[in-house]
Length: 167
Image 1 (cartoon, rainbow, N blue to C red):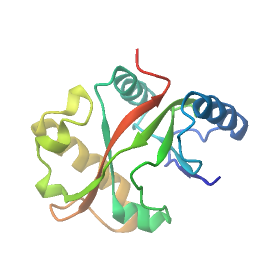
Image 2 (cartoon, rainbow, N blue to C red):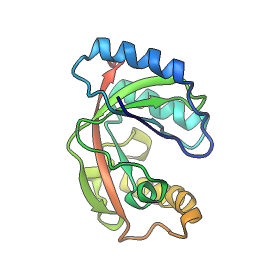
Image 3 (cartoon, helix red, strand yellow):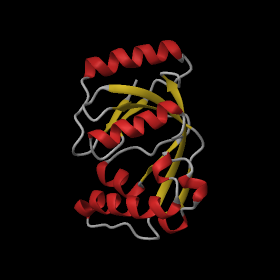
Image 4 (cartoon, one colour):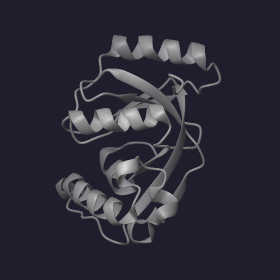
């Protein structure tokens, strides 16, 4: 089993024992999960991370986005369909397991409501999604000398909630 931890600056790193215990429960609930998985924190602060996890558990956020430029710079493998991901709270606590569906590549300038409807309710409107993500991604990529441009590649990652099951 390979576990790839993709946690940026800010969120706490999860405890290995807590991840192992959570993964064991998830695998018992969904034995068809692939053994190799990622660990990610989604959100820019504790409040936002909590909201995003709530939207995922409610089933109103059903996709996420990865930036090949950042993945390459940080040596992370590209996400493939079927990849299970343990999502952690801002404090590092494992909260949910999602499984990536069929991904597709696009560019920031080509993002449409087809993509934004996968995100959480507050940012599904394209007029909200683009400025919010442009600002966030500019901050993320500034350390690599890159910025969010209309030709920036994006991997769109629809997912299903696997564990715990949505309410």
